[in-house]
Structures are given as structure tokens and as C-alpha cells.
Picture 1 (tube, rainbow, N blue to C red):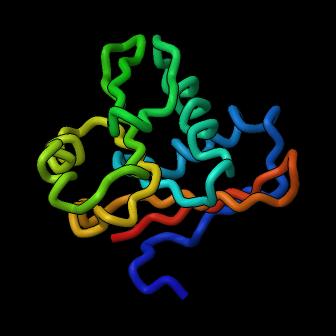
Picture 2 (cartoon, rainbow, N blue to C red):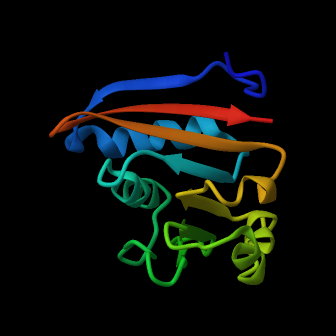
Length: 149
């Protein structure tokens, strides 16, 4: 079904907002050493909300928000590790991504979470995670994790 997926997809069904922190911790466990992860889902499906929950699981010090206009936000955990959150919705081309240095971020060893990755697949490392979020209803999401590579 997914020829480049190296582990069986992990699925979480009917996830509510109150369960999101638990799911975020489980996603991090499943990602293991994989540091770059793209998030796919329609507008308003909860990509940024999930990244905020992942940030809490990683003990990010700062308030996390969407980097829609800056393309990337940098955060730091209590242990001093960096996390990068990309929102590439407004990205015009892969060349623009190269200009802002996304590859340097991807190969930095820091966690990188990327919303709207469609224009940068050619820049991703060989091994990366993909989180798919599907809206089930107003209060529930179905979340699937795939590891490519």
C-alpha cells in the first residue's frame, strides 16, 4: 500500500482535544530517532494544535503558534533542545524553501514539524515521518503516522 513506508502505519481513531497530549506523546515514541515530520490535513483539521501538543510533550518553554507569515518558528525545550515548526502554506516554490535554508534545519538533528509540505518533498531527508489528520466530526480527528524511508 505504501511501498516506501518502513513500519506499519500507527493509527489513532476518534481523538478528542482532551486526548491530544497523550496521542502526541505516543507519536513521539513511535517516531523514535526520526526528527523530521510532515503534517497533512485540510485547513482547520488541527495540524498546529497537534504540533502544540507535541511541543508540550517535549517540554517547550515558549507559547507555540502558527508560523504562517514567517514560514518557520523556533522553540526551545527546558533541556535546551531546539524545535522548528514550519508552515509552508504561503511558500511559492521549492526555490523559496532552499533560500530560507530548510535543508539546514532538516539536517540539524532538531525536531522539524512541517505543515503544508507539498512543495518541499524533494528536500526531505530519506527517512521522515508523516502525520495525516482527518476530520471525523467537529470534536474528533483520526490521526495516522507513517515513517517513510
